Length: 162
Image (tube, rainbow, N blue to C red; front, side):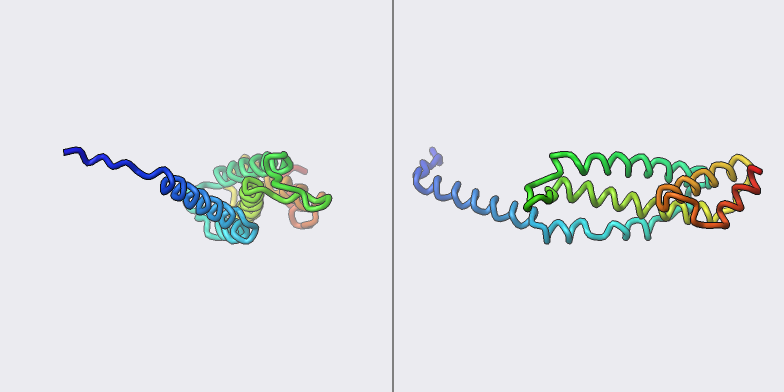
């Protein structure tokens, strides 16, 4: 028995039109600025809940250095044309890719702050650990403030390196 049914081309076209309309509506909903803000709006949450306990001091320094490099890369990437959806006057508006990469850039910045706080909290076990920790803290201070704004950090560096 042959169960193949011939579909009416008119009904097939209507179904395709409905599916296309549904796809366009879904795309508009998921790529709207409100949806993107909701999805990529809590960059700090990840950093605040990160557990540093499995890592020793040098590991945390390496995490800091890695996120610093990733943040620099993301800063350059978010200025690329693929991250700009359209222009509103003279100002670019982020595309969904732009929103995502900007979120990741912020997440890395908050994570770097947490890494430096964790580095500062821990006691180095050797001169090498102390030096690595001081370099990371000094680099972060320069990245964030353009100078050493924390007097205690400068004193630590002077004591360690004369």
